[in-house]
Amino acid sequence: MRLEIHIRKGRLGIMGKRHLSFITACSIATLLWTSPSPVFGAGEEENVRVASYHKEKLTLLAEREWPERIARYRFDSGYTFEYPDAVRGVFVTGHSAGGSRFNELLELLDKTALNAMVIDIKDDNGNLTYKPEEDSPFYDISQNMIKDTEEMMSTLEENEVYPIARIVVFKDTLLAESQPELSFLQNGEVWKNGRGEAFVNPFLEEVWEYNVDIAIKAAEMGFQEIQFDYVRFPEGFEKRDQELEYGRGDYTDENSVSNRVDAVTDFVAYAKEKLEPYDVDVSVDIFGYSATITEAPGIGQNFSRISENVDVISSMIYPSHWTPYFGIDKPDLHPYDLVDEYSQVENEVLEALDNPPVSRPWLQDFTASYLGSGNYLEYGKQEVEDQIQALYDNGIHEFLLWNAGNRYSENVDYMLDLDLSDIQENVETTEESEEVESNENSSSDAENEN
Image 1 (spheres, one colour):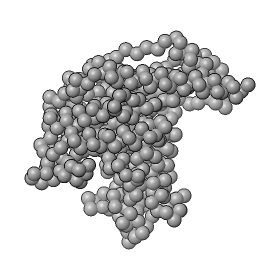
Image 2 (image 1 turned 60 degrees about the vertical axis):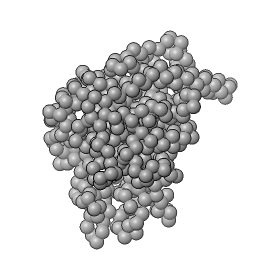
Image 3 (image 1 turned 45 degrees about the horizontal axis):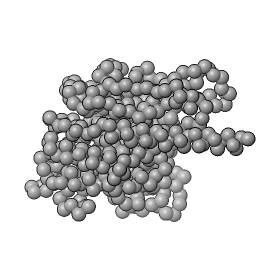
């Protein structure tokens, strides 16, 4: 039997997509004969609170017999993707991934410091964006947006683009209409919000399984990370929870707020556990304001509890989406200030966690003209750079760009003279502290055995 030994070290790149990784024999010996160190630790640098730095995964193979009771299944997609120095990505719809826009986006990533794509695999309506085998339980909800997933993954691998699969979870009009018992009913009909969108019920494990099964298919395709979006109840649910008809599953506590928070958190933990054999990271998109309050009672999002169950947390902090907050009257006019104020709050929240995830916020690369004259800016190079600079100034080095049509601003400097040695210094500090903790745990275990 082969034992796979996974070693995580800090990643550091230089503008380009390739980087050199190494590990000393001493580190290997330490890994083999001591307890494994935590996957993530909180990195810190002077005067800046830093949530976490991602760890590199290398694989060594060694022959060793293990008792059958601890043998574990590990899936290998056959693709090789390296985690970049820091993820700098863009959102890509299924239509873009399967159409001519895909080559345009590849060219954008090739000529800039961008290095990742977040690709729709289950979209906002509940459609799969590719056609699985005809006997797949998801065939009927699939559309042929991405015509050849293997060719797409091979192209991403060849171009060294880090692939992330976006899966919209509880906003799912297709599933709600086909199985109303999994949704919320009003007068016997599937309830929909003002935009005509239906949600499925986070209390029901059948809905969890449905979405995680789709996530597993994405992992088998070769995606290195599964990003769950709309991990929540509908907005304003607390105002209508008593008038709608829906199952509560195992969540029968009289406190409806805690029920919702528990259900959402439990789904994330469930997904993380089920995806563990596929060696993928798990991330969740979350409302930015959730980090500024204890919990968002209506939608069931508790920022800290969700963060404790993921590898990456991606707050949606688009300046246009905030009401007057942080003392900023018209946030869309002040992209740097909004992101700067938010980042300070998020760092404080994540710093309080024992094992914080990587922070990788969603940034705005679109113009919110719907806000009305005098309330918005035309977003372009300067506004995108302002948001990125605010993240860097707060020790956050990963980000994603959102534009629904996948048309991103030109000539943006995504690095902004970022000193990558600062990232490496923090990674090394984190590794040293983890090695010390690992050695201490090993010594303690030895003493207990004796």
